[in-house]
Image 1 (tube, rainbow, N blue to C red):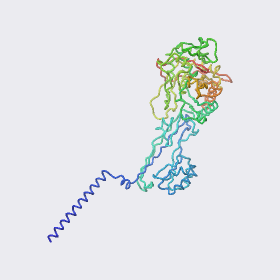
Image 2: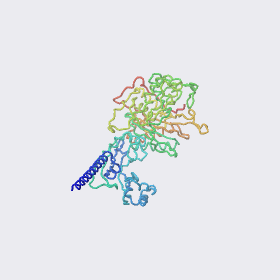
Image 3: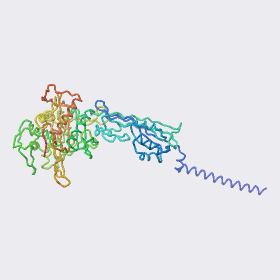
Length: 604
C-alpha cells in the first residue's frame, strides 16, 4: 500500500513538472510571437485591407471670357484582377478586338501575381462600354478623369501646359498652379478577400475628394487659336525653324495670346511644349533700337528733330559698321535714323549718350531680368555688366547685337512705350483667379510722357514710310519696328557645313507693332521668326505682315473699334495710353525719361 502511494506521488510530480514545462513553453511562445511576430503567419491570418485612391475632379482653365481652355471629363479605364481570370489567352484575344491592342501585349497584364493591373487608361467611354459588354470575369471598367482641350491638344500648349496620366500638372500653368487645380484626392478603405473582392459587411471607410478650383487666364481662346494658326503658316512657308507670336494689352500687361511653334526632327511644323516666348534667347537686332533712342533722348544727348552727322561708315576696333543700303555722309534727325534703321546713326546716338546711360536704360526696360510672369525655366537673357564691356560693346548693343533677350522682354519694351512710358508687369492670370500670392511688382515709370510720345511718333514713321509698311492695319494707327538680326554661328556670325564651308548666316526676323485707335494704344503684337530660308527673311517682309494679320483678327475678336475718321489709307495716331493710377518711379540709376526709335532692318 505504501509502495503504491510512493509510486503515485512520483507520477504526480512528473506530470506536474511536465505540465509546468509545457505551460512555460507556451508562455514563452506567446511572448515570442507578440515581440517578434512571424510575417508569414501574419500574412496567412490577417484580414486584407484594400485602399483605392479616388482622384479629385481637377479645376478648369478658362479664358478671359469664361470659355474653356482645359477641363477634365470622365473617361474609361480598363483594369484586371489576374487572380480571377480563368482564361488569360481568351481574354486577351477578346480585348484585343475592342481595344485595338495586340493580344500578346495584353497577355502579360492578364496573368501573374497581384490582384490589380491597369490594362489601358483614359479611353473613350464608348470603348469602355464595349469592354463591359464582353463580361469577362476579372476585367472591370472604372471611371477616371481625362484632360480635354476644346481647341485641340496644341492650343496654348506651352503657356497652359499639360498634365500626366495621373492628372498631375507637368508644365505651364497646370504645373505652376497644380495644388490649386488638383484639389485633394479621396480614398476608400475596405476589407477584401484573398481574391481581391470586397467582403460583404466588412470594414469600409470613405473619404470624399475635394474638388479642384478653376483658374482664369488672360488669354482669349479664339485669338490664341488664330495666332497659332497664322504662325504655323508663316513658319512653314518660310522654311523657318521656329516662331513666337504674342498679343498683349499694354495698359494692363495682360497676355491675350502666346503662340509657340517649332519644326520637329521630321521637318513638320507643330506646336511645342517649350515656351519659347520665355525660354528662348536671341540677339534682337534693329527691333532693339528704340531702347538706344530712349537712352539718347532721355540723356539730352540728342533732340527728336535736331540733325546729327551720320557718316557713310564707322570703324571701331578695326570693325567696320555701315548701313544697308550704303549712303554718303549725311545729317539725319533721330526720327530719320530710326525710320531708316540706320546702324551708323544709332551708334552715333549711343556714343553721344555714353556707356553708363545706355546700360542703365537697357536694365530699366527689364533686360537681364525675368518678367513678372516668372515662368519655370524663364530666361533672364544676357546683358553683360559694364565691367565686362569692351570697345565694341556699345556699338553692338546699340543696334541689338552682343546681348540676348527673350520675346517676352521685347514685348515688355513695346508695352512700356505704348503705355505712356510706364512698365506694367506682364500678366497671364486673371484678377481674383488662382491661389493667394504675394503682391506682385508695381508699375514703374521708365520714360517720361513726352519721351514716350516721341518714340511713338518715330515708330509710326517706320510704318508710314519705313521698312514696316506691311504692318498696316486698316482703320487703325500702327507704330512699330522691324528687325533682321544675325545670330552667333560657327565662326562669329558665319555658319559653316561639315566640310567647314561657309553656308550663310542664321537670321531672326522680328516685328513689334503698337496698334492704336481714338482711345490710344489698344494692342501690342510681336512676331519673331527664327532661321527663315529663301528670299523672304526680313522682319519687314516676313514678320510685319504676320503682325498685321494677327492684329486685325485680334481687334475684331476683342471688339476694339477703329479710328473714327480713318478712311482708306488714312492713319490718325491716338495719344499714348493713360498712366496707371499707381506707379513706382524707377531708381535714378536705372530709369530714363525719354523715347525714340524707328524702323528698318539690322545687319551688323
